[in-house]
Length: 159
Image 1 (cartoon, rainbow, N blue to C red):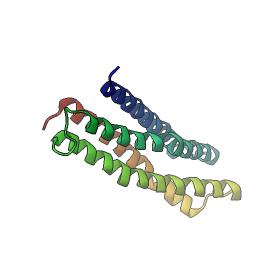
Image 2: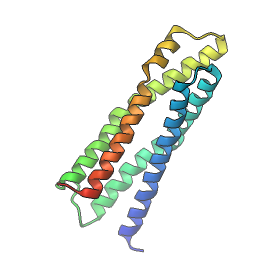
Image 3: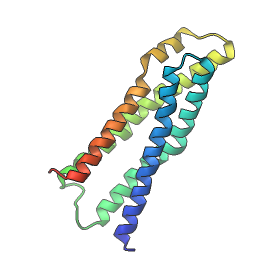
Image 4: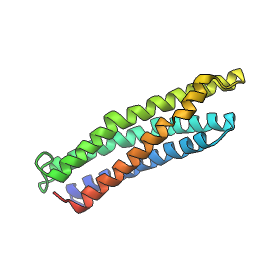
């Protein structure tokens, strides 16, 4: 196995880790926002939080690092002058610095407010407002769409 193939394999594994973390975060979020049971929401928010920190974040970081190292070591593509690769890098930075923090803030707020409501036994107006917001679900769905767009750019290499 050549070094290029090894980097491609490591990058592919990091992509799988990233997508598994995204699924492991979004599925409980969808479940939490569709449920009316406070206990089910608390458990779903806890599961989503664990998956976000334990799988999604490491996968997101590894995708960027391994992809950049693979592109730099590869003699085929220049990461700055290749248009489609530059677009994929821009989409990655958008997910890393805009989407992921926005999803994290909304999820953290929902987790904390759900735990407080569970402890007090009543749903606070802040929790009702947070559950009506659905920002983490929307941002997570945007991340899924950005992944699809990045994959399409990588496969078709239009420019």
